[in-house]
View 1 (spheres, one colour):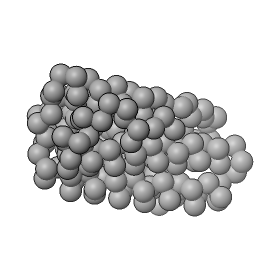
View 2 (cartoon, helix red, strand yellow):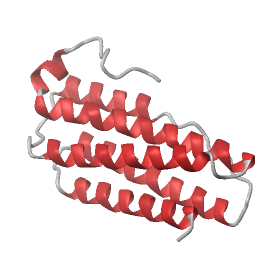
View 3 (cartoon, one colour):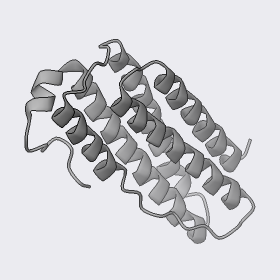
Length: 159
């Protein structure tokens, strides 16, 4: 399996995992965030598919951290927090997957031509952002009172 097939499989697995997480929560805000992560994996899959065909690709910066921050603020304002603590372990698993995926892309960026190196690096950075989102979900699930009462939201920086 070449690096593009492997990357596409990782992205497909990530999408499927996030869709499973969406089905396991009843919280509208968390469903939205997890759906955003799944949709991002679909975009990555398509990028790697194009890269495999040696098509020119452009990896656009996504506002996922800003969008997630806005969802958290809305959850706080509406006092809509009803997530199960068991989900934290699932988010940790997703976090590990994002880290491994990021590491893989960083490693492979050094093995592809210059035109595709930038795409691998940008996708690796996107995976880092996903990790940050998951870290914040874990904190939110484990410490909702502290998390939701923080008016400054310093813990979700705009990277």
